[in-house]
Image (cartoon, rainbow, N blue to C red):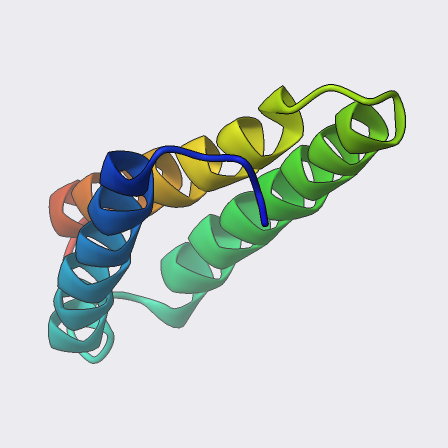
Length: 89
């Protein structure tokens, strides 16, 4: 339905699953403020990317799904790296 290649969907699912596990592992050892700021940045990017993908879809472009799924693949990886490199409590 999103007109995205299967490999991108699989990569997105793997990134979300892996990074979700990393987040769970770090959530108690990082300051709440750091974790909250990273979540706000992640969710803000999610909203902007969803809006961009929706706008592209409304204009008839098939790339909207690729943009959104691409963000879902890259953003969790960046989030996990930033969380891992953040100072511990």
